[in-house]
Amino acid sequence: MKKYIFFLGRKELISLAELVAVFGEKSIEKMGEKIVEVKFTKEPDLEKILENLGGTRKIAESLGEFSEEKIIEEIKKVNDGKKMLFSVTTETLAARDEQNIKKTLQKIKKNLNEEGIKSRYQEKYIGGKGEHFEVIGDTKNGFELTKIRAVQNFRAYSERDYGKTFRDSGSGMLPPKLAQMMVNLAGVPAKGAYKSDDEHTSIVYDPFCGSGGVLTEAIHMGYKVIGSDISDKAIEGTNKNMEGAADQVVKIFLKDATKIEISDIPQPPDLIVAESYLGPVFDKKPTEQEAIQTQRKLEPLYKDALKKLFHFGVPIVFALPFHKTIQKDFFIPGIHEEIKKNGFIMRELLPLTEIQKTKSEAEITKAGYHPTRKTLLYDRPDQNVGREIFVLDPA
Image (cartoon, rainbow, N blue to C red; front, side, top):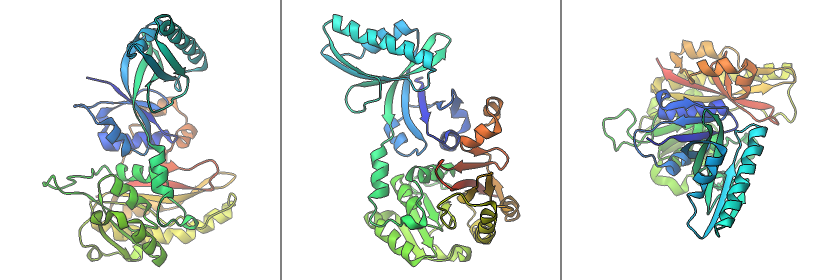
């Protein structure tokens, strides 16, 4: 059976949680800081898989474990006897090992030249034509050599984001990769969810749809969608952005999320994925008092929305704000009690046992998981408001 290595994104533990939700915990083997092995029972379509994973940057196939010298022979096997273009990256290696591998790779080029084979070697991944490798170390036999099989299409994400007919940057924009991750975290596949009919296409409902960030990514992933929002402007913008995918749109409508009824929707959703209203934009880090006051105003919205959404009886992936003050991060108070009161169960997102042995709580939090609150965290260093992600199941 072939071995495939997945390279995780910046928020490593959100990326890992996404893989666990999609493939199941038994299929995942944690290998290193930003890499995991995913096991498949049949040959996977890696490019298609990667297209629908927001948190994985690239996928490589393991060629085996080799000494430095054996790596030379293994890479040389891919030449066609004419001209060889190749790149080798070493992002998981310590500085000492990285320098040793680079010296070894220079020997490859020299050997090829001596054999009359023209070659061009680059130390960075170049994409496109050529053969592209990643060296992972240390293993008991030296280093693991992998061949890159699929790379995240950053341009496609940008086009779906910035190429929208309607964009409202003033109301906050959910990154497309995060939208994909949130859809995947529900663990409900695009086809056949909860139905005996395999032809059923699962429906994603976003009750805070804004300009359609979640809906756009869900459609791209093969789901049908329903969206609602309290804003006329948002609904108008979403409809414009959905014009090219009318066959996958069940309904887009104007409604306050705290007043949603099951009767508002013509077909029951299979999952609910939403980034709630995050509150006002802060140009600088808020004070503790500003963070507390903002959250007090927002808390009733989230509580009332959860009461309504529980009645749909499907998994919910819900992003709420957390505020980054100079002293510490502030999270919505009392939301865990409200989740429990409304009959939801918070899903265990990660097999954290081994991770907790090797990382401090601060490191785990920085990597995208709050071990005390049992939630995922997504933010950038320059942001003053981050996103706390809950994955909820009806009891």
